[in-house]
Image 1 (tube, helix red, strand yellow):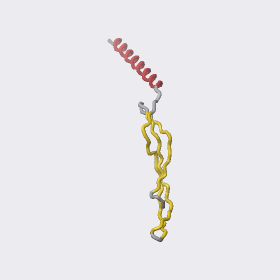
Image 2: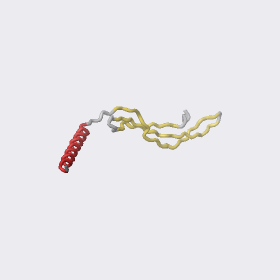
Image 3: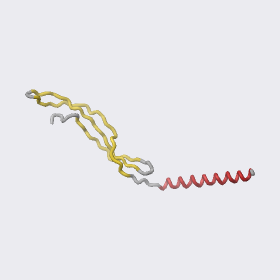
Image 4: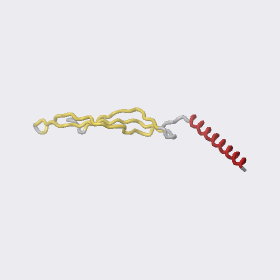
Length: 100
């Protein structure tokens, strides 16, 4: 009886080793096919402010225009879960028309 359990254990161990080898082999062959998923806001930061001048009636008034920078990037994903980020760019936005 003891001999049968050892044989059964050896067969189970051999099966586990064969399955593990085949899983590892298929993982090495995978090549990601990335698909474009859209853009994401990567970061934003305060750009300070600058003065601008406008006329209100006959009087020139100084006002402040706040600047914010936004950095975006394109997101690409693979079916296996891998993600790549490409083509990063920054957009500058002013809080007002800054006098125009």
